[in-house]
Image 1: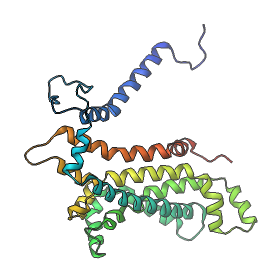
Image 2 (image 1 turned 180 degrees about the vertical axis):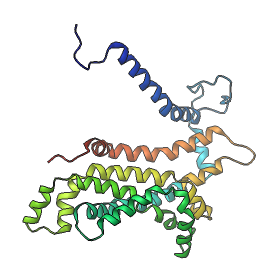
Image 3 (image 1 turned 30 degrees about the vertical axis):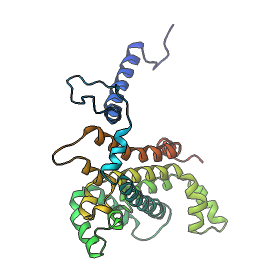
Image 4 (image 1 turned 45 degrees about the vertical axis):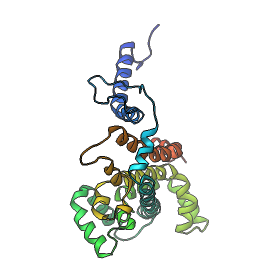
Length: 280
């Protein structure tokens, strides 16, 4: 049977699937290994020369040991507060700023856009000292608000939302203006329904960034009762001994909320990634 133009051959398909399997092993393999380690009993040697992937003594006791070793639920609640502040701040702030840069005409809009782009050039380590000085001057050190404040609005998210709003057909704005809609009404009734996909992308990435952040909470917080989950789980790695099974269980506990958020918003996430432009 003749192949159509551009149809990959059997060899090309085989290479593609082999590459996909390789990428899958590289990305998902460590997670599955951590999950397997967290379910292994104390009788299994995780440091064996040829360790088994499937647990021979399946147990969930390691997850209970995490709660007995550290106040994991308190740490998780602290991380949830920080992530919630960051998500709300970015969802509201990036949306308003992105709409203003894309749809409102005012003097200096190109200058503001250029400044936003310039901030992306600087790595986070460059501004971390000035961030700490600012948070300390506001009296927010050793508080969850101080942890969440620097990430409450990210310039990258502003630019993402600006791109999404700029892709909305201008005819929709023109029609709304003819009907007498003001800027707020155009944002709510014209802009937001067309950028929900990109907004979900911002929400997911903001939540993951705030939930997984380690360095900034470690710098700001000194009270162990206010530690976030990523910082608090370091107590599982003791000075003189460490149980890799319990550490793996703590890692899985920290990972589950990310899975829940992504599973909830994945429909909008892939829509925001694939659209690229808004259909009129």
